[in-house]
Image (cartoon, rainbow, N blue to C red; front, side, top):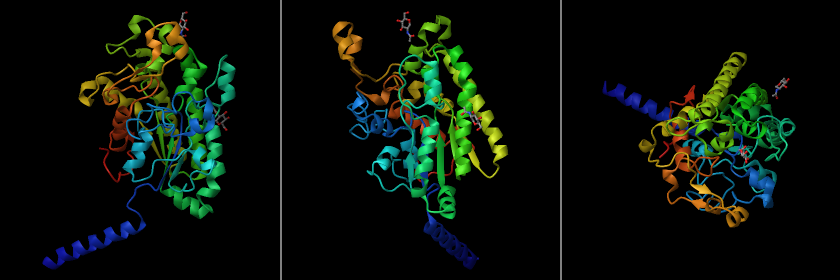
Length: 369
Ligand SMILES: *[C@@H]1O[C@H](CO)[C@@H](O)[C@H](O)[C@H]1NC(C)=O
Ligand SMILES: *[C@@H]1O[C@H](CO)[C@@H](O)[C@H](O)[C@H]1NC(C)=O
């Protein structure tokens, strides 16, 4: 008996060692596509000197102590994913394209703030005024294809790398709604197209060799200050819930997410060898909107930071002169359209450690603190 225990102990010890020779990590690389909710520097890299606000203080102040091109006071969901799996923060494609970053084998981020799921031509055709950026999903996929020869050298090598890579497609589509439509009713009409664009991107990546993809749904836009403001004119008092979230806005996103899940279940049938995870960002975020005090939040809808508008500040009211909260950890909303690091941490935790990813992601190397 003693011998047997010793043998088992020895055998497990040996297996453990063997495992660590390949890698203790569940994923070796992360490739991400999306908009400002997951941009780590592409928007600033593309728009350079036109950028007025997000390349300056207080962006990044909570964690990086400087602006990084993230639309946040600190880390975003993608950063928490990288940390959890023992990977470096996913570098923006623009840093790779301009030679600042050489190591691409641990992942690249193609997400661009303002990006849409549908091509820019479509958005422009619906809209009279400006579009934020032209790098829609199909442009981001084009970058990925262009970069592929530097990611891996041949089919076998690519297969080996992608076997252990996580591909994240989204969140994307929020800007399509914001830019191409004015009312919730109009937004509902373009949801089938948004879902089709997300599905198409997922298929493209599968055909390029992706074997584990995460497709997140949209966030509860009805609780996002920028969206509430955008829909204010087409809303009436009965549209708000007790927390001042717009019920039809959240219903719209729930509908969109249902359609995404439906499309993913079709893809799973078509590509049974591929693991496609639906990440329920809506459910993960709803946790803190429904019970703010449980998560240390005191402000849910009001942004922690409002950039000053110099012209309007002089001419009109004080509300245009800017605002910065003292403690971003007690705010869910960072700048109107985006969450704080505190909020992103909770969403990331819910997705990585459960129960908001279906099926679950692989086991993380470390727990999110
Ligand atoms: C999705 O792909 C199909 C097939 O290539 C194409 O006909 C369709 O226009 C694409 N849809 C979008 C929204 O990109
Ligand atoms: C709402 O209506 C007001 C008054 O007509 C207008 O000035 C404002 O631009 C509108 N807001 C939006 C977001 O459409």
